[in-house]
Image: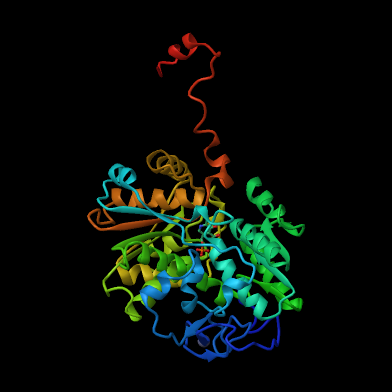
Length: 426
Ligand SMILES: Cc1ncc(COP(=O)(O)O)c(C=O)c1O
Ligand SMILES: [Zn+2]
């Protein structure tokens, strides 16, 4: 557990208001099941395992959800947020498009393919979902600073959400991050800190600061249990948009692995609540070869994940020591899915493939996911007759350099018909 340094860090000893966390009843250890009261805790006092939110869900109906707003708060009864969450200034993320991808499906030989396009969130990645839940927790804990270590997208989402909520933000990134991701944070905050090191170094620094400073809510460190729940909304939305049905299989990018574990948790909850029919589904994880600790462990058939030093253009997925890696392995194996990785060149090719088949410009993380989908088909690991969803988690405008050398003008011509005709495109 790379992110855990202590059971409780700041923000400390808050007085919690009634209903601050909706139907959440406590925190429960993912390793030993030990239960802890709701609060700014993230590691089990018994075994230091990660804590997650446990609920006492009410009976929730499809109709109640459908009557809610067109954002993640339509699922507020299933999240650790108060019932008046819509009233607080927030980015209102979610309810992004689920697009039928017939052209990409035809290209890959998949009969029934969908793209869940999360690039259209307010700061153009799925991170707006998790940050909205973290902001609610930080507010309830009376945090004075809203912060994160980030591979880029999270910093964008934290900086924007903090600006809108009027809370001070400080965001930490590796100094070698893509320029657009730096600008997309710095435009919202004057406290973007570039750290000379990789994400795992930045994450360690954040844990240290969280232990030293009072009142700092690091979204993915000391309020991680609340933050992580936001990713469940991807799973809820996919099921609702399919007509309250689970897909047969889903392909999800893996950095820390949090998102993948929460989509699975969402599907399980929907089954338990009777909102969808119980049926088997397969979960596949996608990594880039230059940072593939989970894929390597999957292929080796082992349970332990060996941290790596990332070296890939998929910088948003460049977490060498993934906190949720072991749970990703467990889910992909249990459901009959797999974890696969591809080269940087395959990431670039997949970005262009998705753009030219479906009109969706994804960033390197989405290139990784679509490229892995292609590889899963080519290697016979994915049944092409089953209904398949692939998640696009971020926007291509943030990683332009990845494809800047492989696409461009077909010709540069003088403004005359003759010059145009000479290109052969007439
Ligand atoms: C665009 C994008 N997709 C996917 C991920 C992976 O998320 P997780 O850390 O939950 O595995 C990230 C993480 O930063 C990301 O920025
Ligand atoms: Zn424990």
